[in-house]
Image 1 (cartoon, rainbow, N blue to C red):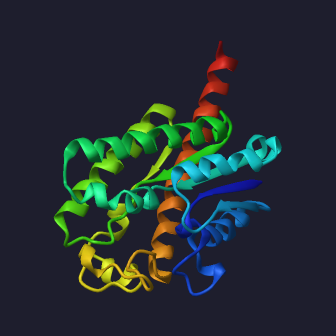
Image 2: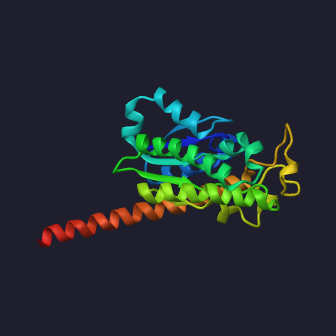
Image 3: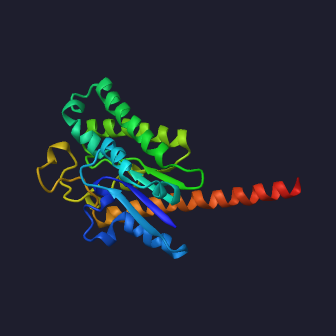
Length: 228
């Protein structure tokens, strides 16, 4: 089985004390218990959704066609790059950023989704839970992700639910949970080992439920065809 992991620095494994403790590697290891699982990691620190989408041009078609599991977690850098605009707090500016990301994420999904694969997309956790504007911006961005997931029949992993109330433990270099905590280095953004573990658990539970439903539906469809 081929697993395709798409994203930015979080998917790449930043914040984990070793590559094996990243949520992607933990997920691969767990899936391998049910059969040999090969991982293709298409993620790079700093990537926006546009950069991730563009990078897919470098992949051979067989990667898309043979992937049975796809994970996608992207958007943090889209928001960080637009921070100057977003911090104005204007709803129209937030909507513009969301719309730009939506077009890129839609393109990624359309390029990667197959009827036979399980595609899981995560909403973004908020590393600044005590900054109301950040909560508002990320909430609006996540609503966009949810709409994409609903439109394309993707498995949704709710990042905020996994992290809410546990940010001091789950976010590396966490300080006060406000945007002014941002630094040139040691930014309070990436998951700790505990945060990666929580992401892995969220992805695995969601994927496992989806695959179980798909199997049940297939059996049910087979029985109905036989009875007919």
